[in-house]
Image 1 (cartoon, helix red, strand yellow):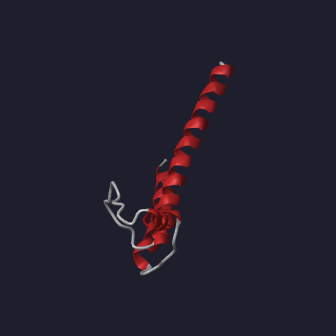
Image 2: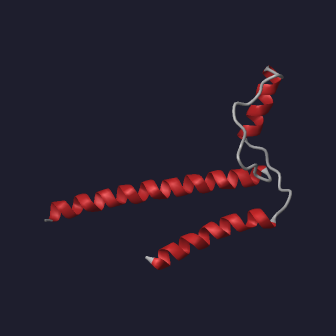
Image 3: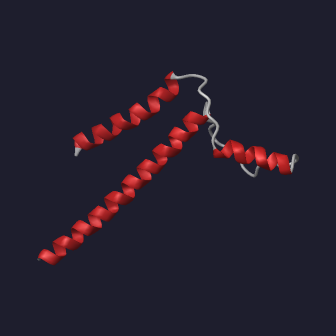
Length: 93
């Protein structure tokens, strides 16, 4: 169990450390395009919310989104595997 946790920490560190090392990376995503389209339609539009932490670049934002999706998929996959294993164990008994 400790080895699994250590590997997860290493993977997360490998994903997050470059965010602090690489400076001024730039990549536009769907959020930027949507913002451009909204301001084109209504120049006086004010967003409802503002982010708590502003990522340094689009790549950072994309990486964090992908990391969030991967963690969520891992949790869902683990849960489904656990339920399937539990069902198999109940069938065997």
